[in-house]
Structures are given as C-alpha cells and as structure tokens.
Image (cartoon, rainbow, N blue to C red; front, side, top):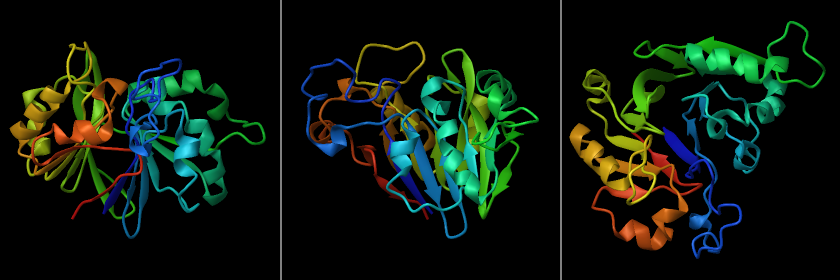
Length: 254
C-alpha cells in the first residue's frame, strides 16, 4: 500500500499569496506546499483523501485511472473546494464521495448543482455516501475505519487504514477514540508550526507527543505553514522516526 502526499500545506498554501519571506520565495520544490490531500493506492484500489482547491494540479502528474472513492475529512474549503475538478473521472462512472452527515448536508448546499435530479451537461456525477465514526467501509481491497478527532470545537474524521492512521486538522482527540489507533505503525498527522498556540490545530510539539502516545513507529507531519521554515533545515530538527512531509512524498505501508 502506498500513500502519496499530494499536498502538505495548510489552508493558505506555501507560498502564501503576497508573502515575501525567504521560505515563500524558495526555489526548492519541497518548500512548495499545496493544500492538504493524499492518494492511497493498492494493487486493486485508488482512494483520494480530501479534494481541495489545488486538486486538479495535484492529480495531473498521475496516470488517468478510476478512483474507487473520495474520503472527506470535513467541510472546510481547503479540503473540499476541488470536488468539481474531479469531473473528468466521470468517464469511468460516478464519483463516490464518503463523508459524515454534516459534511454531506453542507455539500448539498454549497454545490447544489451537483445534487439535483436533472444535472446540466458537464456537471460531475457524484454519489454521496454518508459514513459514521467507527463503522468500517470497504473500497476495493481496502478496509477503512473512520474515527473522530476535534478540529477546535468541530468533530471531523480521521481514517485508520491497516497499519496507517491519517489525521488532518486535529487539535485534540478524546480518550475513547484511542483504541482505534492501537497498532498504528505509520502516522500522518497535522503540525501547523513550531510555536504560537492555535485554537484548532496542533503545533509540532503536540504532534510529536501525540505520536509517542499512540506508539507510532514512523510519523509524517502535514498541514504545514511557511512558519515551519525551509524543509531541509526543519527536517533536521525533528527526532528520529519523524519527518516533515512534502508534496509528492511516497509513503509505503506494509
């Protein structure tokens, strides 16, 4: 199983529009951070996790093949704004979206033209499936178990897939969710910046502490701002077993 980080950036992306800091002006590709998204691939399945405003450019380098499903963590713009851009995949059939009820309800309001009985020509054909925390679903040959993390006061989804746990936009997690993370070997988790507390996101230190709490063997930090600094320098500051993800990074999971 391979997870490709399509975007490692936070909602503003990197470079940040109008910013003249050295990170935003960097020519190193690892310092360019599209909005958060990932592509999971196995021998028999391709699953997209989130579909933000950069998704068209994020998917262009990949072979044009069907998607078995799109897992949505929550309704915020940087995670769902690119759903319409998936319309090209409709040549293979309807696109199957999997989301909590509140996300599904919000999508019907924000994208009403995609969920009418009579779609206009060219509109994406979306099948919206409601999922619930702790209720497994199977996409292709992949078993997915959603669980809940808190994005400030907003409950959102993380996904447990075999030995992989994928979490974005977490500030905290309730103790009753921790059993769903037992045995995690590879953790992908958000780490906004080094310092300056944020009301709805972990900092780097929080992410490290969380990883150690659940006993992950390898941890990749995502949803990064330009405040992380240059990738090559920032990565050296992390303890063994931790790494900052970058756009295009491939993570192999047994």
